[in-house]
Length: 341
Image 1 (cartoon, helix red, strand yellow):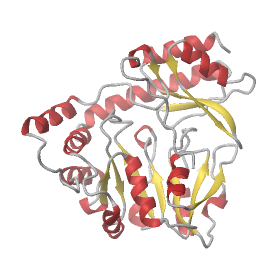
Image 2: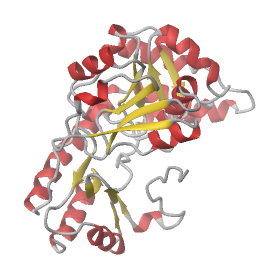
Image 3: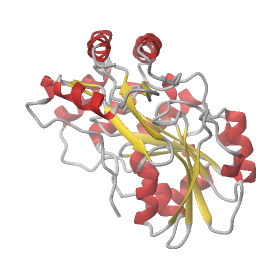
């Protein structure tokens, strides 16, 4: 297997030389409440093991989401959640279904389990074919990134509910970018125990460096998933920081508003430059170009100190995925692009 290859991260000491718009990180500092909470944990000492179930976070998240704490499983980033779910449901010679193009880690997780990949290509308009919901005898788990990466598009909750009704297996709705979207699938979890929703604090809460994510599923599903997670998969610092983050709703609303406003302005500007910029529900924009090769653009931007993500898919062509940065970062990127297309 090839293994998952993350987006480029400049080495220590070189990061300040780049405008980093390649890994969908939040360009703003996290809530001050997060730093204060982490500081209190450090001050009290780290000699003891953390709470293995991240109870403080689950209690506060449950209040905000309108569920009970036993509907929530916490993980070391949402990638840990995806790993736990795959480990629980998928065995050797089973099959995992996911759409294409989408998050490349889904394939890696299936291959680790010795499972086959059942890949369903998106339609040209980024809608999901009805084939995604068709049963077969081998499929044990379906992944659906919603909003999707790299497109930033969404499958409506009503369509997700219909897929779940026909799939013979659980479906994990990966809502890593959902705080930038207009809708979500959280309410579907109570309607169908095959539906699970995974979220992360890496994007909207500006905590990619802290590593904290969670899953919402019905309690009998959560109970089984706990059996296969690592004993202490969330450390004391991440639990405290994550709990403080979700408690600061004002910070989230203000930061989300700033990113969405910049995203809309950025999408319009990229369209004016001739990119086929896809309207996004995430904190990035997918930018193929009908007449200009985009890989040389990616290289030129990098040479000029701007990192974006070049992605090529055998069945769907290539494009640039550009994260939404601050207005100043986006303006710098757009200025360079104007000289290249």
